[in-house]
Image (tube, rainbow, N blue to C red):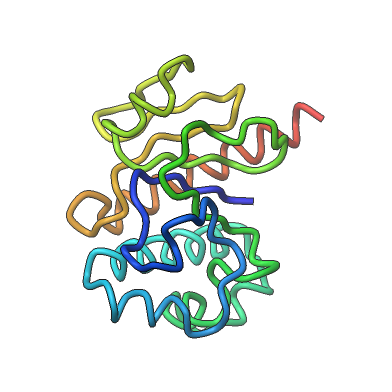
Length: 168
């Protein structure tokens, strides 16, 4: 499970009281992007690229059945059974959930969200807490999280997932 946390939410009435996006109907990502602008399109695109990159690293045949990250985004991302979740402006991380990796978008947001959690800064862009499976990442925007940085984030996620397997 890949849980992504960000400090805002789509500016649409139906998302004002939603805390987690994880059961979107087919076509909803495209609708949100078309009604709210490029900001949300970038978030969904980067999230899809990340998951598709992870699928390639893990040779995940179910995800690689999609011909591209765009196809994956439109047919599976944030839908039931996708093992992806987007937490909108949360007050805290869902650390009670044992499985999965928590990706927090942005340094400023991470300072508020993770105030009581120690982080190891790996470089200017990424921090990690192995005990809680947390990664702080640049915001899901092409300028901040380039394709090279998406690959780096995918590698960090794989390293946390492998560490969890070894601990059990």
